[in-house]
Length: 301
Ligand code: 3HC
Image (cartoon, rainbow, N blue to C red; front, side, top):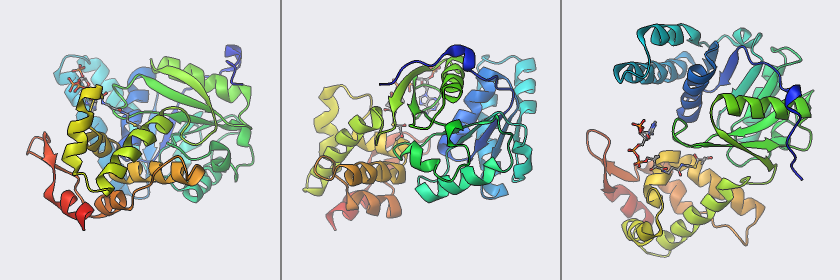
């Protein structure tokens, strides 16, 4: 059973470290910055990736300022609080470190093992994994009790939920800190067990998996999208796949299929489109025009 932790164990977060500067990491780095107003540092494999993440954050801050949602003072203060670096030593004084690196178990294990040598014994580690086992991600940690799952949804600024994954070794202070952080981010947090897909992705993997099964059986993508429209999904399956990233989507299906081969579908075609896409055709402003001819050709091949 997953019980609520004692709030008094929550640790104060005065500096946030984000590992990764990609799609999800840069979105939640921005959220930490806006809601906690503490220093936030991002890192990635190289400076080019770091700069891309920083550019996204600066652009979004500018948009908020242009819309009048940030005063000049706030805008300047937040800009001064965000830094990007490839120098890992700058994580030494972070009390909350969250990763969104590639969804590969060994990569995440190594990242945490490396950062554990840098941070203080009190630092809480969080992983934004979408469906890997948090317990296994912490397998190379000296103190796996400091690791918790903290799963955001895309678009991070808009989706109200965070899944806080209480892994078998997660201790109460870590869980309490995660719940407090979610509250400070103004997200609804649910505590989940450490099982494949937690709660949301298990359902999503069904919707996307069965959509892909229909595509692989010969139904065009566009027809699957059209067929599901009356069900009231906020976006058609193809647009949702594009939003979460085709590689991430394919990976989520793979993970569920590996855990329950008879219950979940994995799609080789989705991997082919992810590698050779794009899935969607968009206009110059990014508005979706429909399924790309490349994608329809790839799934028929
Ligand atoms: N980034 C930031 N903000 C965005 C955004 C984005 N990509 N897309 C929309 N928004 C903001 C808009 O700016 C707008 O904000 P405002 O009201 O303050 O101006 C607000 O969201 C509403 O936007 P729209 O008017 O365009 O609203 P829509 O009604 O079209 O809703 C949506 C957009 C919220 C994205 C909706 O289509 C939706 O809920 N889609 C489903 C998303 C979903 O299921 N996400 C979960 C994916 S699974 C996942 O991430 C887990 C991973 O592990 C796989």
